[in-house]
Every structure is written in C-alpha cells, then in structure tokens.
Amino acid sequence: MSADTMPAVVQDTFGGPEVLRVQQVPRPVPLPTEVLVRVYAAGINPVDWKTRAGTGMAGLLGEPPFTLGWDVSGVVEEVGFGVTTLKVGDEVYGMPWFPRVANPYAEYVTAPARQWTRKPATIDDVHAAAVPLAALTAWQAIVDAAHLQAGQRVLITAAAGGVGHFACSSPAIWAPT
Image 1 (cartoon, rainbow, N blue to C red):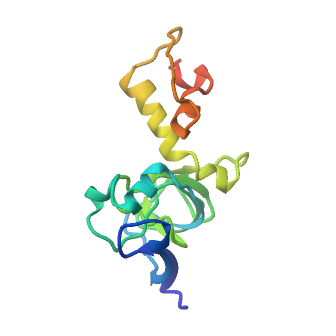
Image 2: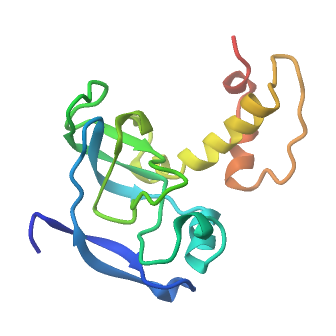
C-alpha cells in the first residue's frame, strides 16, 4: 500500500451487500477550495442501499463502478488553495457532493470546504456521520418548503426514521428568531 492509494468500498455492479468489496483506489488530492478529509465514520441512509441495488440515485450516478456514501465525519488532513474556513486538524462532518458520487466509503474524501462544518466536541464521529442527510432533509421540509414560523404547529407522521426524528426536534431549532 502506498501513500498514493487508499482502501475504499467499491461496487462493480448493482445488487445486494454482496456486491461491495474493499479495493485499493487512488487517494484524492484536494483541488482549489476543497479539503481532504480522513474519514472516521460514514453514515448509511436508504439512498445508499437503494443506489447500491440500482434504484434511488442510481440513475444520476450512471453505471458502476463507484464508491457510495454521502454522510461522513472525519478530520481535515489537507486544504486546497483558497480555503480559509477550515484548517488541518479540524474535526468536520458533512454531506459532500450530493447527489453526485462523493466516495465517503473510503479512507479519504475531498469536497469543497463549504460542504463541511466543524463537528461539535460534544458529539462523536459515528453520531456526527448520521446527521447530515437526514437533518438537512428535515430542515428543507420544515423551514425551506413549509416556512414554519414560531407559534405554528405541524403534524409529523412516520417520525421513527432519520428525517422524522430531526423534524420532531425542539421547535427552537426550526423557528427563526
């Protein structure tokens, strides 16, 4: 194994979990405005397994081979030219490149700095990697689409899933001040 390669979980065909395999792939290099993040944890959402099976986002990604994943947590290892918001050593989490191939099921991932935020010290990497897609979807539904305002009520059904449990969070999170 060289410093120019890294392990990644790849798939060469659509199907069940058995199509996933670990393979050495080129280690990414951050372009201007991007950061290289060493992955500590990657979340798995329904969109991941649906895409792996050939549904979900598969139509946008095209035919395999590719590496799945979008939710990720880790530490900044390198910053590209022009990055001023993050530095080497920052613990971050995010949802890079969605809905394009992002490659978080790998040892390293690159993405624009604006697609990352610093991870709160009160949350570990596994929990942080479970946040981005579900929380952003809940935010988009409640704030961007429904324009929920302080004092309004909303009925949330199917709140047992990722998006639903974020949607049921404290109203102070959703209501603009």
